[in-house]
Length: 459
Image (tube, rainbow, N blue to C red; front, side, top):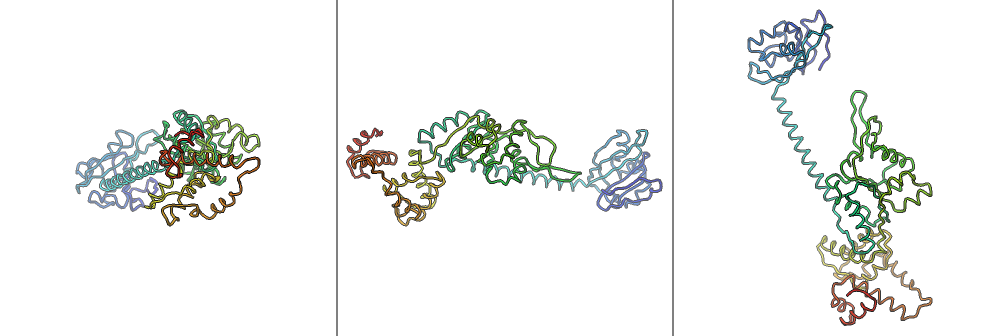
């Protein structure tokens, strides 16, 4: 709206604006100012309104009703709907201007065609509909993101870890998940979230080792944007995670400076957006992860002791895949079947390859195993995948490992017995019945039962 000033000689002045319908009346109801488009709603020109009484215009059913008498009576802002001689509806707002004695001296009114407002209202409905669709898509994406395909709980170490996770999930305490890259820390964090009272809220994962230090505060706490007259808050991940779970992945990669920022936030239970001055409270579940024990990091002055004691309420350790043979066996079969179905093919592993996969030191753990299984399913030209179908770097690793058997101090029968025990154990993990095992191993079913008993393996 254009700015204007009420001056004694301005009775015939027309406001310098082309797109706002503004009328100014004095306390007697006489129109003293009007914009260029004023009067169009009533079938009049703007200069024809100057000097007219709103009471006369109301009696003539031009202003129906007039807004000025309502403002003079109530001495406050009034909003009403007028019906014009042209049959249209107009939303009109009147505002009082007071003199030094507190009496209404002028009334300024401005109006909008209701049909325009209906267009805006329809737009808002469409906008709300689009927003609801976006929220539905976000909910669907969240559910997809929180799936835990490939979760295997077979080994004793994994069972114990998940038993603790399920036990602690309903309680709002800080959890630190320890384990090498690829041991399933993110999967466990999602399971804890899904089993917690915060499961209907968002699950926000933050990789502390990836976000640049210069952007970390803005990413987590948000940022105040705008100028001196109007500011707004661009939300950070702390705000987005409200009512849900915030997973601080690789928190041991944070610098001491940023660790200090987190200590302050956790102690106060609130944070200020970057560049802002108002605090926002924290309302979320906190889970962290680290590759190595944070206690050792504190002793080496790489991690703040205060932050360690805040986070390390419930530590859960996930063992590397090489130490979880039962999980490894199940995961091999899982990924074989999963990728065979994905690529619409039939694949089986040869016994020699299945046994060989147990010998590898899976430094990348589940991530590395998944990658190898997908590669051999896609690249093998035949249904039965053998050792020669392994990626080149893994075949080389196998060939180099053939000389790794320790002969010192062991007789041949002892070595063979050890190998037989491993073969039987792998077969037990892979096949459901002793009959299947006998067929694959090329021995009788009673021999299988006898050897399982010999090595105290369940049949």
